[in-house]
Image 1 (tube, rainbow, N blue to C red):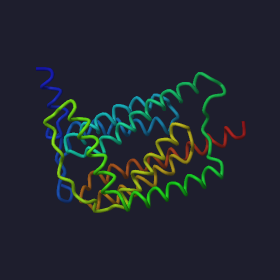
Image 2: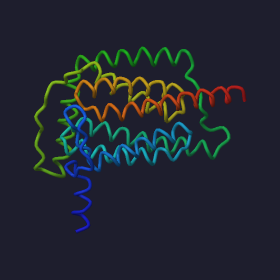
Image 3: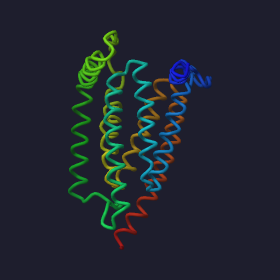
Image 4: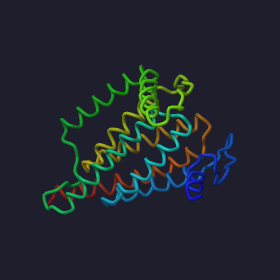
Length: 239
């Protein structure tokens, strides 16, 4: 009985509210809760609270369940990466709170910044050209792994990416921003702002206007994080 109730709440077919924006959008309970925890994660990260990663762990777990249900297995694997990075963030930030010489909010050095920009642009260019192969390969790997537990899982129908450059940019920059956040680098917020702006355009183009509105809110939080961390970095530099 309890398992059936949990399964019902975690189903994308259990709709919380239907929005009549554009072509319409049905918001499930699992997406609503996952989004709330994602917002909490980003908000508390902007306040330099190490427990933001707990919210991040819940967020990526729920979104992994969503991607499993809609058969976006490549995105599911990316959530596993973000899960690991949230665990690392808990360790790195938690360690710094108990040590005077731990992590402090700071900027990348100029050589590091230049290298990050160049590497990111190259990675985005490569992924944009091979994005279908990349995600198809990730999907195949995910399916093979899941078939070890659930043999009945079948390979989903794979469609070509309609927006390869934007999807490649969001994928690469999300990885960059997550790594930078775990190291308390100010640039992570600037990267998140770029990601959120791209996502607003991407979801609007796909007619998912509610998701686009969510990213407007995420952009505002990321901008606040940018301002807060710039102030903190200046203070740490003066100290």
